[in-house]
Every structure is written in C-alpha cells, then in structure tokens.
Length: 328
Ligand SMILES: [Zn+2]
Image (spheres, rainbow, N blue to C red):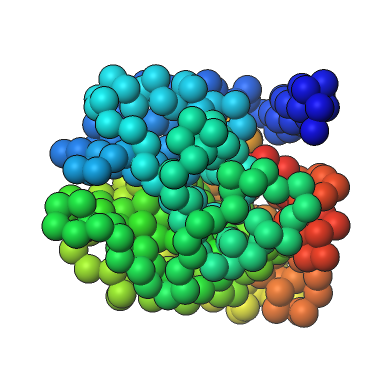
C-alpha cells in the first residue's frame, strides 16, 4: 500500500470508530494510566478492550492491544513500570478493539510472538483485510502452557461464547486470569454470530471454565473493571439462568419480560443505568434483553440478526461478507 493509501485507511478506520461511538453513546476514552493488579501484573484501560501487562524475566507479555493506533500510548504506560521489551502478545479473540495495535509492537520488534486460539487464527486468516500483525505465530486448541515458574501462563479454551475462539489466560503464580469479552462491563456478553458466538453455548463454556480452572482469585474482564472469581461464578449462573428463562419463555413471554424476571436474583447484571466510561452504550438490562432475543433465534434455528451493530464490509464473518464493528 502506498503511503497515501495507508493514511486513507487510518483515517477511514478512525471515522468508523467515531461513527460507532456517536451512534452508540459515550466517546471512546483514550488509553488510560497503567494500574497495578498484583505483583508483576498490570492493566491499562481505555481505547477499546483492556490491555493486561505481565512483566516476566524475559520480556513483557501483553494480553490484547486495544483499537488501532494505540501502540505508542500502551508502550509509554508499560515503560513506567519496566525497561523490558514486549516479547509476546496474546489476543483473547479476533475483534479489532483487542488486536488493533498489534502492528506497532511487531513493527518495533519483529520477534514479538502473537498467540491466539486456533479458531481466532482461522478468523484472522479468513479475513482478506486482516493486518499481518494480527496473524498468530502460535495457536492452541484446548490448553497450552507458556513459560514456567512465576512466569507461567496457562491458556484454556472451553467452547463458543462471545466468539468461538475466546481464550482464558491464567497467570498461575498470581492466581489471576484474563477472560476477554466472554465477560466485559459486568453484563451479558455481546454475541458475535459471524465468528461463532452463541448464547446457547455460553453457559456450558462458562461452567467448564469454572470447573476446569483452579486457584484463581482475580478476573480481568475484557472491558471495564477487574473482577473476582466469585463475581465470575455469579456471572456464570446469570448466563445459565438467562438461557433457562429464554427456553421456558419461548413463544410465551417477551424478551423484556424475561430479562426483567432475572432482576431480583441478579441485580448487578440487570442494572438499568448506563455504566460510566462504557464505550459502546447500552445498559446491563438492555444487553440481557438482546441476549434473550439471540437465544430465541438460536432456539428456533433462525439466523441471529440481533447483532451488535451495523455490518461492515470485509470482516471476519462467515464467507467474509460481514464483520462486527470495532465493538466487543
Ligand atoms: Zn470482542
């Protein structure tokens, strides 16, 4: 691509992002200040998904890299806690608000290794518009361990949820994990049918994670605050209850009535306020209503149309025709 072409692409991407923000609520906040989580683990909020920073003996591991054009801002924050270079990027899933700035780190240091689940690799490779730096150098299927001792990272996959390539990233010694957009903003997840996401599969996947992952206290969500294992377990119960209620109410109740019925037991996940700093709009309750609708469509075997935004050409969707916006 020519320099002018690159600039045009960047401007168009920028307009697309601000267009989404304008339609859907608050402006996307910029890359924030690095925040300590525990020991050598930090999180950087803002500018898309959370970026988790893990400082190891051999270099810095980043989990997710926000929207495009935030690499320098991420690096400036990393440099306030360590002089070590970035050596690895783990992308929790395929969405461009989680792998958008991979290219900055790959350009600076081509040996930076990008790791994803194999389904995420498939979506990246199927999209003719994928930036090369989002293509993983290493992919895993069910489980993979990276590093050892206090630097050990365990990657797990338990099935479809937000997409069908969602990685759980566990920092064993610190009893902490990243869950990407399987859980974000303490509300029902957006389901991306174009990359294999499923409301029906979601509770199974979450329950397998609760059972299969041991000794974790800290849960870093894909967007928003850092949560706890207890919060993650409650969230699993909520998504199971949502699916059960959708099955029971199919053809009898409206999605609004079903979601409202979850309020007494799950007040956190059915709040009616807009959360502060939430980039893409919607209340927890409105998200629950969307997911009951998606459950209805999946249960009836209909195509899921309750997507999370207007389709955009050239994305990683089925047949490469449509893609989610730079949302979750
Ligand atoms: Zn996402």
